[in-house]
Amino acid sequence: MTNFHRFHDSWAEKLNKFTAELASTPTPRPNSTSEHEHVRQLVDEVVAHYVFYYQTKINEARTDALPLFAAAWATTLERSLYWVAGFRPTTLFHLVYTESSIRFESHVADILQGRRTGDLGELTPAQLARVSELQCLTVKEENEIGNELGGWQEEVARSEPEWSGLCGNGPDGLNRLVARLGSVVAKADELRMKTLRQVVELLTPQQAAEFLIAAAELQLGIRRWGVHQDLVRGEER
Image (cartoon, rainbow, N blue to C red; front, side, top):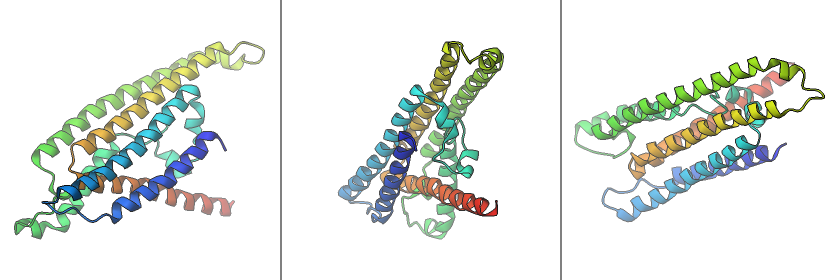
C-alpha cells in the first residue's frame, strides 16, 4: 500500500464523519444568524477537507502521476467512472440540477401555498443562471485538458522506440513524458477543486450543506457498491 493509498483511505473515512455531522445538523431557522453561521462553518470545513485532498493529489501527480491512473485504492467501478484520474468536474452541476429537481418536486405543494424552505429546491433565477454559466466555462476547460491528454498520448505513441529500447538507455525522455502527464493530472485536479468551490460559493449555507451531503453520499455510495461488486466477481473466479 502506497503512502497516497493510505492517505486516500484515511481521507475518505474523515469525509464520512464530516458528512454525518453535517447531515445531523438541524436546518437553520430563517432569522437565526448564528445557526446559519454554524452551518457555514461546517460547510467550510468540508470544503477545506476536499481542498486538502486535491492539493495532496496534485503534489503526488507532480512526483509520479502513473500510480494515480492505476488507482489501487479505488474499486473497478470507481475507476470506470474516472476522467483524468478522478471524477469529471461537470458532474457537480448535474448533481445540483438533480438534487434541486428532487427537492422541488417533494414540496411543490408547500411552495404553491407560499411556504418556503430555502433548500436546493428553491434556487433563484440568478443562482440557476450562475450554475449554467459555470457549467459552460467548466466544459470548455474540461475539453482543453482532454485535448492536452490526447496530445500526450500521441506523443507517447511517437516515442515508441524509446519505450522498446529502455533497457540500458537513459530514461530522460520517458521521465519528461511522465512529468508532462503529471502536469495534465494537476490541471484536472485544480479544475475539480475550483469547480467545487465555485458551486459552494453560489449557494446559501443550507443549500451548500445539502449539496455537499449529496456529493459525499454519491461518492461513498459508488465506492460501497464497487466494493460489493469486486467481492462478488472475486468469489466467482
